[in-house]
Amino acid sequence: MGEGWGDFLVTTIWTTKVSSDYPMSVWAANRVHGIRNYPYSLNETVNPSTYKTLDKPGYWGVHAIGEVWAEMLWTVSQRLIAKHGFVDSLFPPAPLANGTVPAGGFYLPQEFTADYCELWAGFAVRELGPDARVDGRTPWGGGVRTNGFDVPRVWKGADVPDVPDTPHDGDDDDDDDDWLWN
Image (tube, rainbow, N blue to C red):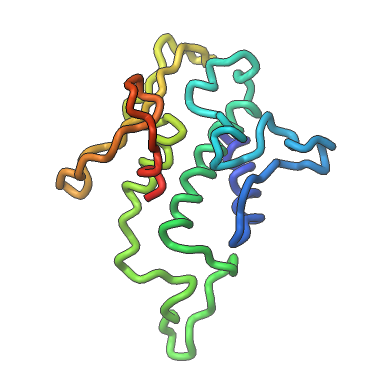
């Protein structure tokens, strides 16, 4: 996961207001997709990585595992940016002369502190919901993963309204997965 956090931090630093796909280290690899198997992308056609991807041959090393984790983190971060907006400055503004923190821009109003649903939905779209599992895991990895599409139904002690169907969950009503971005 350390490799994934490294990729995620780089993609976060290089993110712009008009972010799209992000291939990692194109210059180093001299490949369109960079040094990873896929560019980091919200488009599942461009980057099809899910939790189950870790069962594929070649996904046992730290770099391959990390790129799947980084894709999940990229997806979650883009959900949070969609909800809260993008801030151009990497650093917060300095406090005012009287010691107070300037409102707006970098600092969000208090009502934007409940990101529970965005976090879980971001992981669930890459199939690491709370119902994901691995059977037969050993201390060296291995096992068989089962994707998890669900999101928790409890939020702040209250039931969350039912969400529309999750994609690829085995039934035939996968026409629309836009709920993940609403």
